[in-house]
Amino acid sequence: MRRMRGFTMPEFAVIVLLVAIISAVLLTRYGELRRDAEQAAARSVLAALRVSLHAQMVRSGGDPSTLARLANENPVTWLQRPPSNYVGEMETLIPAAMAKDSWVFIKRDKMLVYLPSTDESFPFPSSRLLKFKVEFPHTLDRGGESVAMTATRGPGTDPVQAPAGH
Image 1: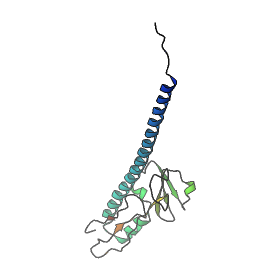
Image 2: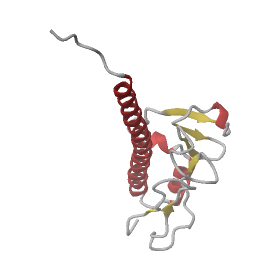
Image 3: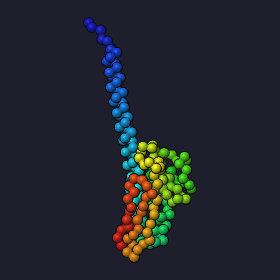
Image 4: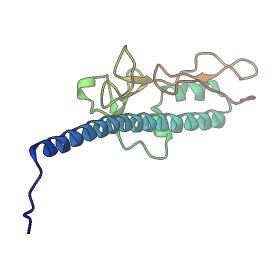
C-alpha cells in the first residue's frame, strides 16, 4: 500500500500564487463595484430631489414668492423620507465634521453637500465634495417658462426645466 503525501513545495507555491492572483482580481473588482454602487445611490437621491422639485414647481403654479421660498429650503424636506446617509443640517460647511458617504444641508449657503467615501468615488479634480443648490437664475417671463434648477456641480447636474405654461 502506498502512503498518501501532501503537496510538494512547487505545487504549494503554484496554489499560493493562483490564490493571490484571484484575490487581487476580486479585490479590484470589489472596489469598482463599491464605487459604482455609491455613484448610483447618489444619482438616485438626485433623481428623487429632481422629481420632488418638479412637483413643487407645478404646485407653485409659477408663483415667484413660492419659487423664492423653494430656493431657500432644504430640498431633503421635500422627500417622503430622507436618504439613509443624510446626517442633517449644519450652519457652515466643516468637511472634517462630516462622515464619509453622507449628505448634509448647509444652512448658510442653502446647499446640499455630499461627501463621497473615497477620493476615487467621483473623479472630480477640484474638490472631494459634491455640492447641489436649487437656484432659479431667471425671473419668470410672461410665459413662465424661464425657470430652471441648477446644481453647483456633481453627477446628474442637468437643469430641471419648469413645465410649459407654469
